[in-house]
Image (cartoon, rainbow, N blue to C red; front, top):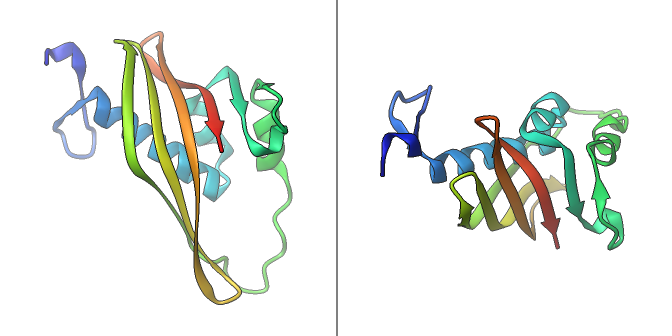
Length: 144
């Protein structure tokens, strides 16, 4: 591995491989979804992001407006503090298309409390990341 394949992890000060960087970026993206953090989510995404998701009913959605709609929905007024939600990736796998493009596939696990019981939901996701002008951007997702 050469120096071009590494970036410095600002928190630890240690070299971070492209694989580690993509896993961290994707985890940050997932956490921004469950926390409703549009600024973080949109900063990781290409403006022409495409997706196939359950919400698209099999139609390819293009652009960030589709995703922003869900971030902009008003939250239900909680009568108590919101229950914590944890999101993680099980068995992440990266396939490199080029030094500047990769496909990341995994099972997404979302843990939360529902009616007083801990529940774990799962779905399969494939996300395509591309390095654009030196910055990794999320360019496509397929969720099932």
